[in-house]
Image 1 (cartoon, rainbow, N blue to C red):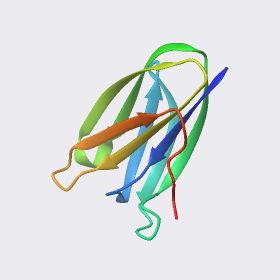
Image 2: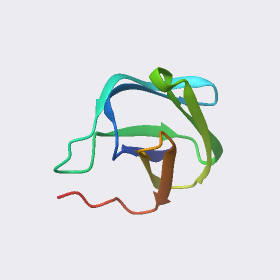
Image 3: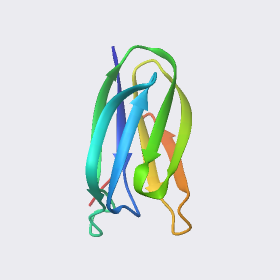
Length: 100
């Protein structure tokens, strides 16, 4: 197994977030809120088999979802932020993101 760490970062204000991998719910958070001093709400750690995958991020209160493809062989950090216009931005890194 490899590790996918999903960093729920900027812009979350008490709304539900659902993460699906392969159509299966792997995280269901009823209220995600960014801590402004950190720029982070939560880190969700998932054990995932190596290979190509698609993470679906659903924001039920906004009636939005986005599919993010990724390849995993060891550990991957995926940062998700909710922009002011309601879109979801993401970036990935093989090393962790820094928080103060």
